[in-house]
Length: 351
Image (cartoon, rainbow, N blue to C red; front, side):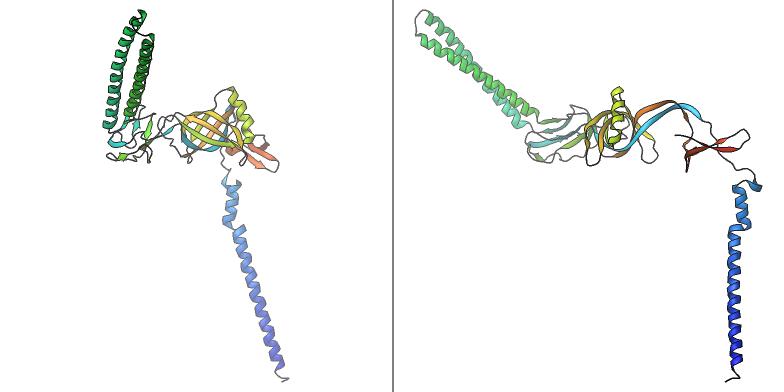
């Protein structure tokens, strides 16, 4: 046992030496990797390119500050809404004998959209006219009798009471004729309801009732919905903090509003602000505004969302630079100014 102890110690020492050597090799490899990443030729080349160095000066884009007028806009997201939307329904019962529009047509006020069978209502009108003619004949006869009775009463040939009674009969027949005239006008109006016309200029939607159906005044669905497309309005909200600024600018004259595409901020149409709501929404802290757009190309569609910017002020003759030139640092905003020697210095600015 005593003879084997040195051998064991020697083996233990060699094992420790190998571990130290392996650890040393790992440290060398890690150091070489760090040197390659942070101080290698490629990194040095990048640093030289970034800061000038052997590759020469750094290219920059330069722009000259200019004095111009700058518009001040308030931005919002609005919802397009038609100025007028009419649900065209029938006012009388009957068979729908014709539909005179195509879905999606632009119609004018007064255009015939559909017709209901007028036969029954024409007969009622004719009956009312005949009743009036009958009562007018009775009235004419009563007037002749009244004239005769008044002459006889003047000579005491008949009792004065008979003349008074005849006079009352004439008044009764006169009122009856007036009632007949009212019945005729009512029948004419009802007959007119059999021709369904467009109440506004606009575009028709989907047809909801087909030709040949029996329709009723008190039932649904309607025949069609007409939406006014030109002009059109946009409803949008702005924070209540901007309300005083908007009212001050609005009091001086109409404010321009632009409808923008959400993808590239291209202007779709130019309009004017029409209404500032008379109260602030307490749940959102915003005020509702309404702008009107002519919409000549019908690019604005009811129900669509659109970006809106409202012009509330124009800064006159102010110094302007590109937005990308403005940098932010610990002490605020600054720009780099090119000097005569083609060097740039940092200069603080107030936007």
